[in-house]
Structure formats: C-alpha cells, structure tokens
Amino acid sequence: MVENENRKEILDYFRLNISEALSAYNGWKMICHSKWKGILSQTMVDRYVEIQNYHPKFFVSAERAFLITFVMLSLHSFDKRDDSFSLYKVNKEELEKFMKDNDKVIECLKSVRNELFAHRDNEASTKKYNILSIIDLDLFFKNLIEFYNKLTSVIDDSSTSFANTEEIKRDIELLFMNLYRGNAVRKREIDIKWLWEENKKKASDII
Image (cartoon, rainbow, N blue to C red; front, top):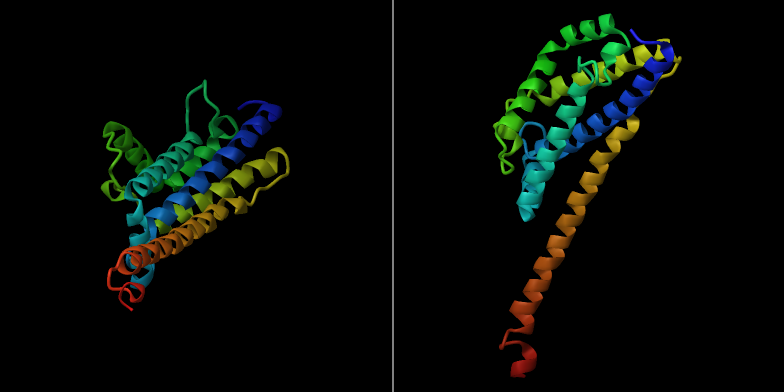
C-alpha cells in the first residue's frame, strides 16, 4: 500500500472516474431502457421508440458510446497493473472484499468489455450483449459509491454524493421532448406546404 499522500491522489482521480462512469451509465440507461416494456408504460415506450427512430444511427451510436464508457471506466477501478492507477493501491484487502461481494456484476462487465472489442459492430444495439438488469447495475454503483466513500473517510475524512451524475437523464429527456416538438412542427409544415400551399384546389385558386 502506498503513502497517504499518494493514496489521496489516487482517490481524487477515481472521484472523477466514478463520476464519469456513473454519468455514462445514466445516459445509457435513458437511451436503452426508455424503449423497454415492463419498466415504463406502453404509451411512453412507444413515444421514446418513435423519437429514437427519427435519428436511429445517432441513438444507436450514442447508446454504444455510453455503454463502452461506463463499462471501461467502471472496470478501471479494479485494474491490478503496477503502471496504472488502481484502488488496489489504496486498500488491497478492502477492494478484494468488494470485488468478491460484487463478483456477479464485475464479471458481467468484463464479459461485455470483451464482446465489445472482439466484435466491432458499430450498428449493434445493447440487446446484443448479455448485460445484467438495471436493478443489479444500480445496486453495483450504489455499492461502489459507498465503498469509495469508505476509503476517502479514512484517507482525508471526506465523502462524495455523485448527485450531479443524475443530471444527464434530465438533459436526455429534454432532448427527447425537443425532438418530438420539432418533428411535430416539421410534419405540420409539410402538411401546409403540400396539402395547402401547393394544392390547386385551395380557395384562392378557385373563388
């Protein structure tokens, strides 16, 4: 185990790492799971599917980018290499206990990571990969935050809420709303153009 000053530097690094991983996870969750029945009502699912079909390649790419980001950054915490920042260097015994308690999710993330880079299919959606439920993943991130704060409470008597990582969900919701509004305006303009302005049977052409 390294000196306290170096351990604080490592923990400061992982504060940002975990924050970025959790933000990416929340972004992925919004794009991917807004389309899943059983989580939302059929009416809302149909609306989110319709919106994502306006720009399907963008949303598939965004979903994949969020997935890669949260998987890779989450696993970085458990890197054992000597030349890498790792929570091993802060408290090896506690980290090994955490990994054992959360083995199901960590092994799943490793499997997804291997699949992502073994099969470079940029058009593949999340459904291609064997990912655990968001219940399991939510609990994993809750446990990771608690574990991180347990470490920082010893090293520098601090804690982090990571509450700002939820903000991306509202941003994506607003994006969905704006796309939905914009498409409604676009369809109305098309109707006005082709069913009215270009219609040779409109009142001004006949009366």
